[in-house]
Length: 127
Length: 482
Image (cartoon, rainbow over all chains, first blue to last red; front, top):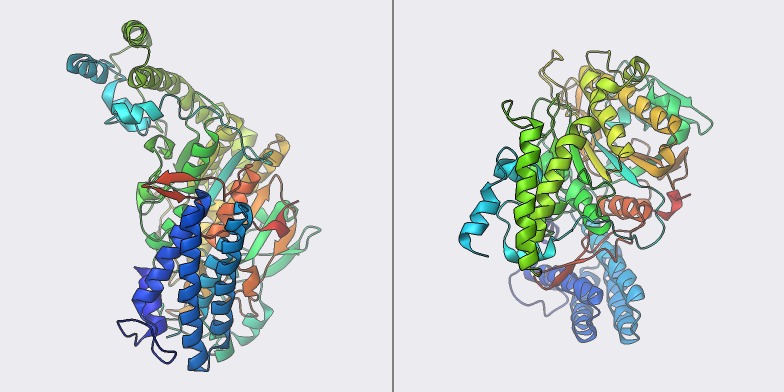
């Protein structure tokens, strides 16, 4: 509940629909999808499920690319651009680690990615 | 197993019976065959991931959220700017729609500060006894959380989530390590107030873990466990004979059905209940403690009496191998006040004076006692709260909730003693360096690490998803480890 509130405050006015252009507002569904996929990724790494982990990480790469494009177009959110890029890179690192069955490194990267999400939400929950 | 047999087992405990099992043996009410298969001996000791630094945790939850700006976090700049509006630069990046709005910077008029010990840690005049133990303490002055309301943030403090349903930290430890004492639960909850703490058992439940791992609350007073004491008309001999007969019949059944795990679980549960009836009252019977010890814990002071008794019980549980003891503080009715806890939206000076008097001597006594008994090296004392309080005043004499920067501390095995990690900004509102922010997940990860558990490898599959104590977050605070 609270997390949704934070997201709402951070991205109001958010448009419901697909984020397809850099100048569009990010919508809550996209952020919720990121959160759900991130939880799924963390679980799949712990379960050492290579195909599912890879699929989750690839989806996150795509989603964070959208977030990065949004904030880059917005122009006044360098921190958010950096954190989105960092998250996208971490998703890439997870794909590599999982591919080489280094689940410890994948877990560490997934935790860093989750912390990046929290950090970004701290910066952007301004009223 | 026939229905009659099942019913017999369910109800034949007589004085011990269903009420006792439902009351103090978490997880055994409504036991079914599927659960029982997992519960043959769910509390048997288990090996940690790596050698543990500590054996027990005493989790001192300061309910209501103390102002650590009035206890540990001395800010000369705040003193200098008191009475003025907070400069906008300090508010950057935070949302401040807390209940009382943003008032003028506030300093209580009777507050004085002094450095203590070789570490030079700052303590206010509210904690004269605890200050003597400065060099035993590891401060975390960059704590952060999500600060919504007390209930929600307390839940996050204990379970890592803002919604009920996840296991508490103590439950994860019970699940991962089992019990070190077959006669006592591995996870006990103590409180000194007249009522159960805010939001109650949601803060010590086992969430999606089997219910056997949830905390067992011990109430204040001479009968700490509900339904533990048998009826007056029933003697110990009568109970023993009933249990022996039940045991005999159960064993006959077990011999005939060697693969019946439910029956074995029930045999164990009845016997554990019997052993606890003896062990638990002794464990918490502080009547056996010396006058000097009672004085040490502040039990002779009417304000600190109940909290002192509670912490003395905590020490006795540590001595008996209880792994996680969650202690919740509040003012009992015997103290003439309309306040219950540290939640000082107004009248902070009076409130914190009373609350500090409640906890200062008992906590100092606990640290001294653990050290003297050689237990501090194998025990972790955690002083924690759901959030801190704002640098600005509320209602002219109080402070509002602050999740952006506050102090918690730990003391005990495996830590750099007399050490401070992180800091807040010059007025004590936000963490100064966000890379050093310590969220509840990080605190949990560090406690687990000291218990010999890798939080990333402490997992449980729930509905096909692998869950861990730190959700998807958590980093061990390596800088504070010895």
